[in-house]
Amino acid sequence: MLVLDLKSGQEVCWMLTPRDQLLASHEEFQKLAQEHTQYAQRLDSLTQKRYLTEDEKLEEVRLKKLKLRLKDQMESIERQYRQHQVA
Image (cartoon, rainbow, N blue to C red; front, top):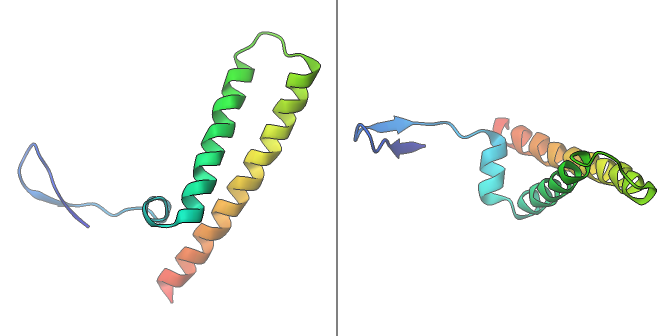
């Protein structure tokens, strides 16, 4: 991919990672990444608290599991994408 560097005015070649390419073009991957980010933000807000209620502790565990599931799904899509690129 050629990109114009605004400072120098020259074209620069940047290689997008498979993840970046999927984020730009794969609807399901985009949806999973967005959900993953939302869970991460909620987890961050929980971890900033000094003490968690029992419900918040359960939510924290649930969010970690959901986040991991999404990450696994995203990695699976990325693996399939890489295999398709090589073939």
